[in-house]
Length: 219
Image (cartoon, rainbow, N blue to C red; front, side, top):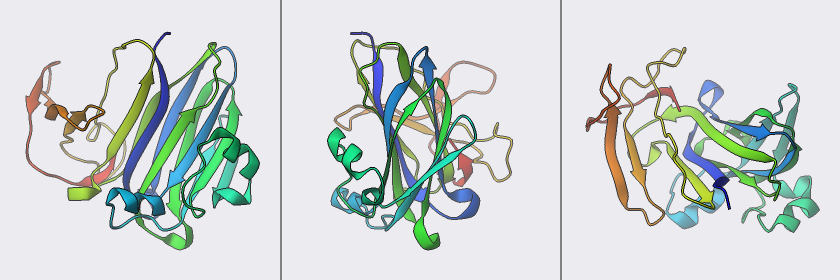
């Protein structure tokens, strides 16, 4: 089986206005792909998150400029969501199921009633279509310290594959960017594979960078 991303996700602090959680991904290929998107908040408390987003709202921006919105997953598409086996644990969490043509897409997670807290955005490939591929997760939001750093995850099916993981800050065309992003890479058991990495300016090499920082936004 060729390598294929089955799930891509990002967890981080969801604030207001420009500092909501913004996740992008691409569908490539020649045929449509069915995906499921989730905005998770309250159920993160079971993983030890003490400041979870109480009522996440999910906005899904399509390639044609239209926007789908869900606030509480049982309000829309309940039957379709339950059929996937991926219904969120909490009724206040949000989900959208969609069949997408190849193109670029954006998911936005914000708190209902301007609420804030730690949230998680996820994209699942729920189709077995070989003619299209889910790839290239990118996330922008406020990167803080401690438990409020940005945490991205991916699940790879099939054979081993080479991937590129980037942490961007200064090159973003926005004000208040993270001045010196650091990147840790962990395996599925949580073991640190590469730690506190930053690219040396003007080279392809990596060096150790250990000072904490904060800024907006980063991806």
